[in-house]
Each structure stands twice: as structure tokens, then as C-alpha cells.
Length: 521
Image (cartoon, rainbow, N blue to C red; front, side, top):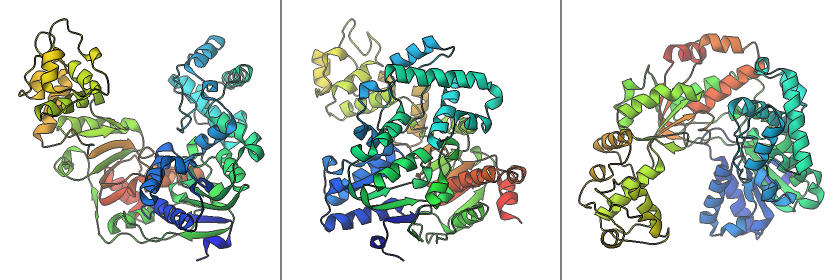
């Protein structure tokens, strides 16, 4: 293996569970031990979540402060910080409303976060779809017409309509000097020679997910850096539809290394994963060994058939499309299992806060102002709360109050020896019934749920003891996709990512079709 110091560019291929981020942190550790200042190290990840996780791990590991790691962030965030764009120049709700008045489209918009990697807008579905096309073209560095000609949704939107919206959008941003997330990248690139700081070493994680435009940003940063270490896995490149350019990752110059040991994927799941990866054309050849546990691949037909299994361990229930999770969610909810879906718990956080706060009062613990307001939201006046008493508004967020204080000074009537479900009677009945069923099963609703429902794309980078994979992959779909190399690769990569989230057991919901597609020649 070539030493990292022998090449400016070094590429690390990290199959699932092989510890790409840990390997990068080990290199950062070596740099700091050698006396390199933390602010001369850049660490860039595809998402804010990944960047923050790496930063938190580095802070804990190296005993640093957040201020020491100012360049641990997303590329969008980095460009925003160095582009000269102010937050109030970003497209706002008012901007989108004004643009709506100038077009035949109806927009809704909330101000964005420059530290997040988001789509162009959260507009109404038809508008969001069109703006997504525009964004993808800009990220891929192709014309709008080229993107439109290769767009599966083109039949729904006449080209003149697309052209009209694109010109209106471009003209509006120029006339108002407003900027969107993609502008953060382009404005930075226009002045990168002057705006980009110099680095000793730059690290780029999950590089297979970067767009062509983001790769231009990486190149601009690299031009001002001594070394560039890039980590990723082309087999997990599942965001091509959103503009990801895996070819730039594969064509990166310099030396390469493949991490060869997975600490996540068990033997049985690894065998299936390898059979899937073998179907991906033009991939970088790589092998890795699984963890020592054998694991198990189960072929089942419904969530109902594995409800008893769901009682223990952590679970990821994954599907190619969100709508495929609807039936699973209903079964899990009916069974009284605690879960989260798309990063939200099965009931509103306010409900859970109220219950947790009431349990604190029962344990003679203090609660703060936010918790008081959560409780009071679900107390019936005259029963749990004094009539006409506007109590919640009188307690500051940082105030700490006892049960006795609430009774004496803040209008609380409810007896704290009573369980939450007999006190918080204003809570929607569906939430009360469900959460009582959850507690009767022995689930702790104050902790993060063991069960997560997500799309495969939403769970990338995650893992669980057990994975349930809903998929419409069949022999026919695999055979049909072979007519299109890109479609074929996208299909296999998506399924590969879903399968390799598994630490112990994998449950496949299309048993016969999966066997036919991947296990039977």
C-alpha cells in the first residue's frame, strides 16, 4: 500500500461498515500529533449530519473545541462562509411569494439553512419537481434542455413551461441579488483564488455522492491544499438521480486503498451483497471480508409475520419509496410498537415531552418552562388546570419549578400521583391509546425508538441489528433494467445499500423474486 505522503491525491474505498470515517479520523489524529494546526485541516461531508458527527467524534477524540474545527462542514456551508453571501440575501419566504406573483406557479417557502444540503425549494409538488430539474442541471453542469430531454417526468411538463419558469427564476435572482443553495457553490467558484483558504490536508467523505459542481469546489480547495484524501464507495452511489457524479470519484488521480474488513455486515448478508455488487457494471473492483457472525437472511411476506421478532433489538424497515412503508407503519402502530419515521417519532415531540415532564413531577424532579407549557397544553381547564389561569406564559424557558410551586403559584390542580394518561386528558385520544399500548409492551417512550422506518436513500450511512427490506425488485425488473446500463446500476446499488445496513438479520419482503434475481443463475 502506498503511503499517503507519496501522493497529493489519495482515494480510500470503503465498503459498508469498514470504517471510512474512522480511518479519516485516524489520519487527522496523526496530523495533530505531528503539530498541524486544526484550522489547517478541512473535513467535508455530503450532509450536515455526517459533518457534525465527524466533528463531534473529533472533539471527543482529540480534546478540541468546536472553534478549533471551523472547517468541519458541508461543502455548501464552507462555500457560504467564504462567498461573501449574507444570510438575508438567501431566497426567503417573501422572495418566493414575490416570484409567485410574477409567474403562473404557486410557491411556498421557508428560509433555508446554509449548513444543510437541501433541494432548491419546498414548494408545492409540481413546482418542486420543476425546480428540482433546474437544480439537477446546475449541479451536473449541463443545460436545462439536456436535463429535460433525459427527464422521466418530461411528458407531464411541456418544454415551454419549463423554459418559462427557468428564465423567470434566473431573472428574479439577478434583479433582486438573491441567492439559493446552488449559488453558494457558483459564487464561491467565481472567486475561489481569493476566497479559498489554504489547507495542509483536506478530507472529503462520502465522495461518491458529490455532484460535478461540488467536485469543482473540491478541485478549487485542492488547488490551495498540500494533500487531498477522498473516501467513498462507488457501489453505494445511489444519488445519481439528484446529480451525483460517481465518475469523478472513480477518475480521481493518485493512489488508492480499499478497506478490507467490515465490522457490520455478517457472513450470510455479505454473500447476498456480493452477488448484488457483481451485477454493477464499470465498478471499481474490490473485496472485503464480513464480520465473524454468520447472521441470517430471512424471506418473509409481511410485517405481521415478524411482530414477535420486533420486540427486541434495533430495526431499520426500509423501502425504495416512502409509500411502500404505509402498510408496515399501520401494522407496527396497531401492535403498540414504538417507532420513528423519516426522522420523526410516531407521535409529536410535544406529546412525548408532556408525558416525560409529568413523570419527572411524579419523581419529585424539577421541570423547565418548555416542559410546563407542554403539560399545560394537554390539561383540561377545571380538571387539571385552574379556570382562567394563563399559567404557561408566566414560566420562562430556563426557570426550574417543582410540583408544589406549580400547585401554589401556577394554577395546577392535577394530583401528581395520578398516571399521565388520566391527567393529560386533552391529548388526542389516538395518541393516548397508542402510547399506553406501547408502555404496556414494555417500551420506553422517553428513549429513541428501536424501530425506524425510512427509504433506503434516507437510511444511507445508518445501521441496525435487524433490517427489513421492502422492494419491488424482481427478475422481470432486473431483466428490464438491463436494457439501460445506468438504470441497471442504480437498481443494484440501491438494493446493495439497503441490504448492507444489516448487523445481524436481514428480512426480505420479496423472497422468491430476490432469489430469482440474485441467487439463482
